Amino acid sequence: MKTIILKEPGEFQIIERAEPEAAGYGEAIIKIKKIGICGTDYHAYRGNQPFFSYPRVLGHELGAEVVALGDNQVDATLKIGDRVSVEPYLNCNECQACRSGHYNCCERLQVLGVHTDGGMTEYLKVPAQKLYKSEVLSFDQLALVETLGIGLHAANRAKVQPEDKVLVIGAGPIGLSVAQFCKLSGATVGVADMTESRLNFISRHGISDHSVVVKKVLTPEYLREFYKGDLPTVIIDATGNRNSMLNAFNLIAHGGKIVFVGLFQGEVEFNDPNFHKREMTLLSSRNSLPSDFSKIISLMETGQIDTAPWISHRTDFDRLPKDFATFMEPDQELIKAIVEV
Image (cartoon, rainbow, N blue to C red; front, side, top):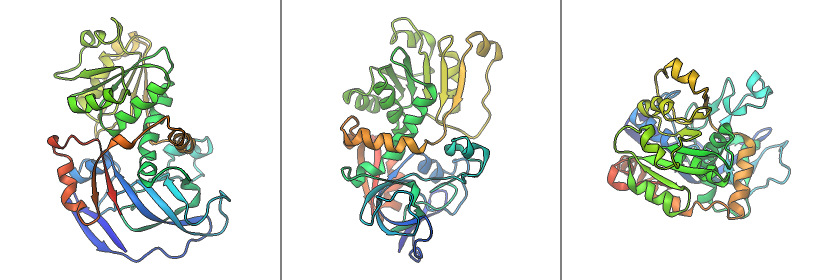
């Protein structure tokens, strides 16, 4: 079967691999149909992705079709031919985190396309319990469920309420999904980014109340213009940029919450008196939970979330090695790229 491997930073190679062996106990074999490209993939391509080693088959945002099932299926309704989204977080079910329901941050977590080979291939064998089917959604939509899960989990970490004034920093796909769920919570939502075209996209589709153009370093005085003199009670930083993340400590309202959903390779440092006087809460957000996948599919099936406008770029297996780098160019105005298998 055809497989794309990232040999080292900046170098993709199309290779042939054997198809997966027969599905075993609790396993399924899926045929990959659509693959979403996310920030993790771009970071891996540039060589600055934490928890990563080369060579690696990327791909963890997957829309797929079930082609084989082993014995002991957790979901008795799962059948060959089903369209599915894939939860790419392979947890151990034994560690303290898993026993307490924190499957997303399992102590021995293996994420498809990051710690272990992912879905940039024709067929993949996965635990059947990691598949979430829909008889309504397209493969395009199913490939975007994982991205949405990151946003939903981050919003849930902040426990966003209707009375909150939320600032999402970073208008890439993750920031877009974060803003989507904060808006669904009824909160007032502002999105900050340096790229006006992304802000215009989010505003045009009603995902934010305010577009905060970042020309220099964000300041409290500037933000007060968007929140009727107040500061945001929740800041969710989806940039993965050190300077942006550390500056959030200066922008949050007293008693507010900061959630880091983006990450960088380095130390988070902050002024302790500033941290204490605001009595702020600092949270990290990693991946998402199984229940998030089911909720998102339901929201998409009922039309409460429309991801069709998100897909701005498409490519296929043969063109991906050439197209991938071009997606990162500023003039591309990228929102989300999809690989068709």
